[in-house]
Amino acid sequence: MKAVIKYFSGSGNTRHVAGVFGQKLQEQGYTVSCESIETGGLDLTPEDLLLIGGPIVAGNVPEKLIRWVLHEVPAVSGGKALVFTTSAGLENANGVHSLTRKLLKKGYQVVGQPVFQMPRNYYFGRYQPTPPEEQLRLVKAIPGEVARALEVMTAGSMPPVPQGAGKVLALDLMAELFSIMARGMGKKLTSFHDDCTICGRCIRECPQQNIAKRPGGGVVFQGKCMLCTRCLHNCPVHAIGYDGVKYEQYPGPVTLISQV
Ligand SMILES: Cc1cc2nc3c(=O)[nH]c(=O)nc-3n(C[C@H](O)[C@H](O)[C@H](O)COP(=O)(O)O)c2cc1C
Ligand code: SF4
Ligand code: SF4
Image (tube, rainbow, N blue to C red; front, side, top):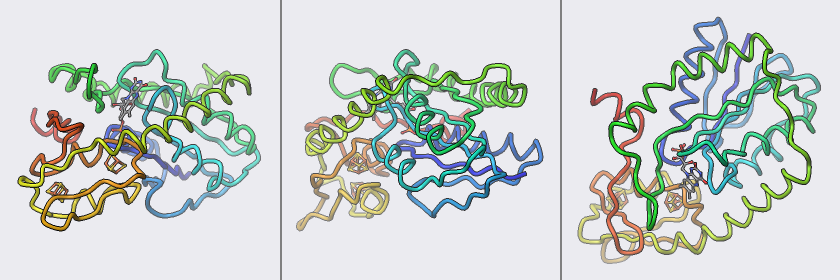
């Protein structure tokens, strides 16, 4: 039995949940591969369980993940797939419906659509960061929630209900619109040149190759941002802000757990 997990993650939440799925499936006897869509292809046979995960960005998964599913996931008649998302709230976490519809069209049987609440990684302007105790509580709840999602999948007790084509079309239009807006909003990312050590991490890790060195120090942001917030939260010297403001960095699930 093999499980192939592919995900997109900006600040680490979805990567963490993907990793917990991997551990739990290994305990159940699966051989697991777990990788970002940014690295490697998709090595899948019809017997494998495919898991696809992403963060919720304005109500849907990022357009980058949608495009990856449309173009890179092979049609596999009767193949089994589970889709999941992470988000700061659960009310408009509709990304699983967008992913489900695409996989159904490719012949998959979708065997789970769990959504996971995780700390907010986007808190510019009116949004506030998730309070620290709540961040830890959410991250610590994930192993139990993943175990439950796998129990439901195995029991087949809550078969996913696909949403209609019209609703999914609207969701995907939102994702496309947001990806266009993000290119503009991303220009407000701010490099605090004097603090930047030009370590190159943000340049290497940006999923859009949107960051370059700035002659004279610091970095510059081009017009390709998807607003994943990875650069802002992961700069080791906190030298990236937004619209001239240094927001506190979200430490991410691994750091949160290691601090306990
Ligand atoms: C640009 C942007 C938009 C977001 N929009 C939503 C949203 O509409 N609803 C929500 O609950 N969370 C939203 N979030 C929060 C993320 O979905 C959440 O923190 C997620 O777990 C991040 O996952 P990641 O670390 O794998 O990128 C948004 C985050 C970003 C960066
Ligand atoms: S990660 Fe931070 S210190 Fe490193 S190059 Fe980017 S902005 Fe500069
Ligand atoms: S520049 Fe934009 S796309 Fe690149 S890491 Fe930063 S937020 Fe993400």
